Length: 168
Image 1 (cartoon, rainbow, N blue to C red):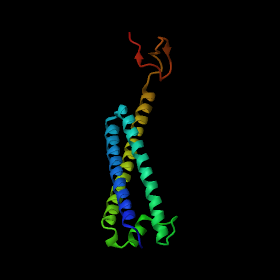
Image 2: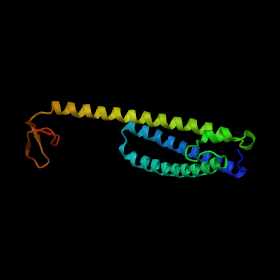
Image 3: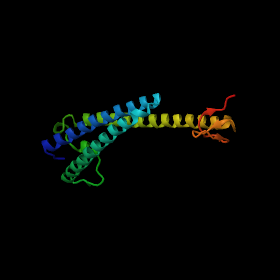
Image 4: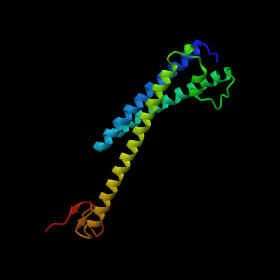
């Protein structure tokens, strides 16, 4: 496969940028996990804003990489629609693409870490939701049928009103 040095350098730069952004996403997911564990709801907006910005940048890098891979595939007589990054790297002569395969391996490892973090956080959120659901269910089962007052001061005969107990 013949490719210009500048095209290969550009692909290498894109992979390095994608790895950098994936690391940002990984850090964001770790911040999210910390906020989930501490039930720090006030931190979620900032974490989600950072995640959205990082995902948007990753999407742009992916678009640029796909476009460049399409050009490389066409120059090698491969189908631009079905070519993979690994197939392109395998077709390139190692001396013409120093470091490209190393960048690819590092990026693949980083992406595996991101997937693991996402799965872990999803499980953690599921666990917290289950705990909260059980807590609410237990509260509804033990709430007295009377003796509660609403915020307006009228007597409540069903669970779910304000948590002001009747005394005396």
